[in-house]
Length: 89
Ligand code: SF4
Ligand code: SF4
Image 1 (cartoon, rainbow, N blue to C red):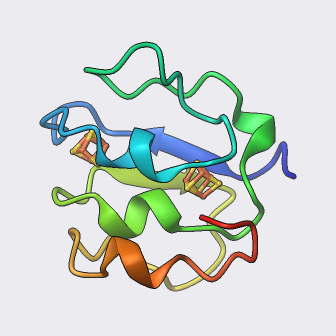
Image 2: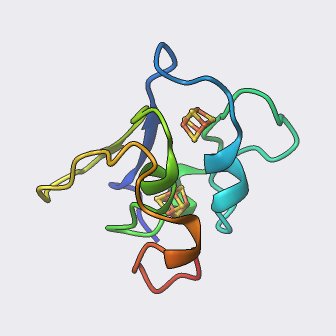
């Protein structure tokens, strides 16, 4: 778990589809607020995970601590494929 890696939503690009909230199983997003994605527990995010960012259709998610060459794929990576973080995303 990481305090130095967590998603940041670019709300001007977000169309509130809810995919990121649904995708994350680590309690990072507020699942009770189901319209606008809200990061409420950034410390729960898995270091290096791009699970939510990979399925965002609008490329609206970036990460604090990003140190890879990852760029938002605008949802082209299937949600079923997983994110590879090993955390069950
Ligand atoms: S899906 Fe992965 S990157 Fe997104 S908030 Fe959850 S743990 Fe963090
Ligand atoms: S997946 Fe992207 S567009 Fe959909 S709610 Fe999350 S940030 Fe917004």
